Length: 97
Image 1 (cartoon, one colour):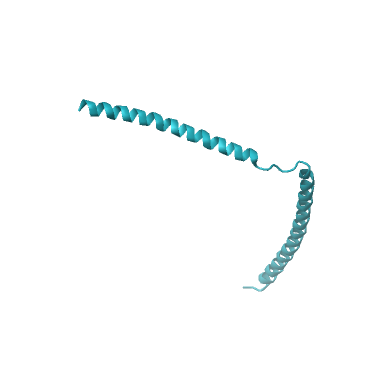
Image 2 (tube, helix red, strand yellow; image 1 turned 120 degrees about the horizontal axis):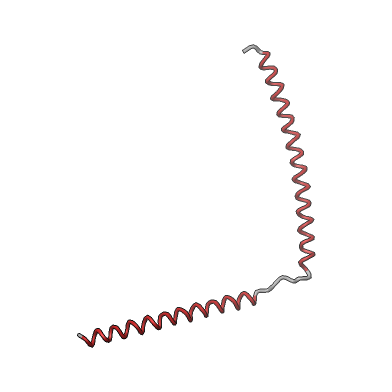
């Protein structure tokens, strides 16, 4: 029985030690692979960046102008509705109900 116990202890400590080392090696390998793939990714061209930014700025300015026009239309319609409600209240108060 003593021999079996010694073998079990020997096997368990060896297995744990190697599994930790294998895990560490796997983590290091995966980290290096991710790092290499990140470095290999194509970076945008620095010369095209200002031109792209200008295009985006003009697009945003156009969208802001469109939003301002829509807001003016909404305000105008809201004023018409508010006036119609005011007139309706006047007529309803004169109705005597």
